[in-house]
Image (cartoon, rainbow, N blue to C red; front, top):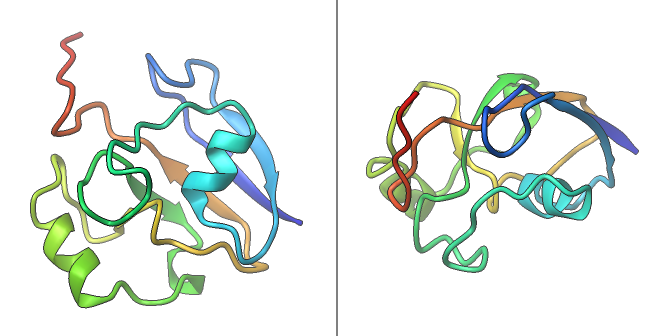
Length: 111
């Protein structure tokens, strides 16, 4: 099992979370399995950007994003160098720390 630290998100995971994920599972699948209700409007088919996360630690352990994911990420709010679509990012044995951005293309919340 691989540890994923989810940084606090005011709406989705206010206290943050530490979860255990199986290698081979997507970050999105792992979050949802542990009650972190990350949005995934396209049902994890790499057709939107609502499951966008920023991988703060462990980014280098993930397989590189393919061209389709890169194209989708170009549409994501708050894109950063370590941004990934959580539905396309497969957990390895390396622990991860992820941040769920405050905004997505489906919802905009103000402080």
